[in-house]
Amino acid sequence: MNGNNRKLILSLFTSISLLITLALVIVPLFAFGYVDAIINGPDTILEVPSPDGQYLAYVIEAPSIDPPNQSLMIERKDKSRFLPIAKLAEDIDSIKEIMWSPDSSIVIYHSRLYLTATRISDWQTIRIYLGVERRRHKPVRRATFSSAGPHHEVETIRFPESGCFTYQLKDNDKIHKVRMNLLPSFQ
Image (tube, rainbow, N blue to C red; front, top):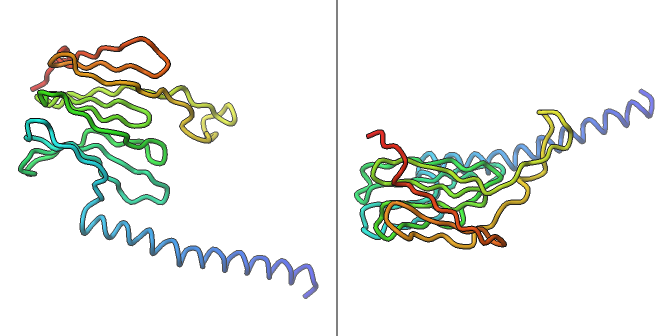
């Protein structure tokens, strides 16, 4: 066996050993998160009760090799029933705050990229995108992007009257009004 073949075999052996070592360290840690989530349920990272005390809006964090991996949820006070509202984009979007209208008719989940508003009476939900178009590294669909890119920051969220809310973006004087009471009802 000549010197070049020995170097190639040694390099291959080193690479394989490194991959096995990483697998033996990372896989059990990642698997532990999944096993824990299966046994105990996912972690709740934020929860806000409704002003009337009848509901709880919360965010769960599921195990992920590249977090965050969050879902927006709501449940009744007695915890007998719940509803998944939305799943945030894994590794890209994360929750900032949860807000309730004073009359508990609307809950708003404010994440990095969305305002997600739900009308409690019939669970109608809308999502307002706060991001901008993403750029690809190459002009093909399989090309990756480096991050979610810039997004608009929300300055204020208010509930001026029952059934609606307003929001204003930073560096923008325009106030956007969303009338949740005009959404169709399917119940």
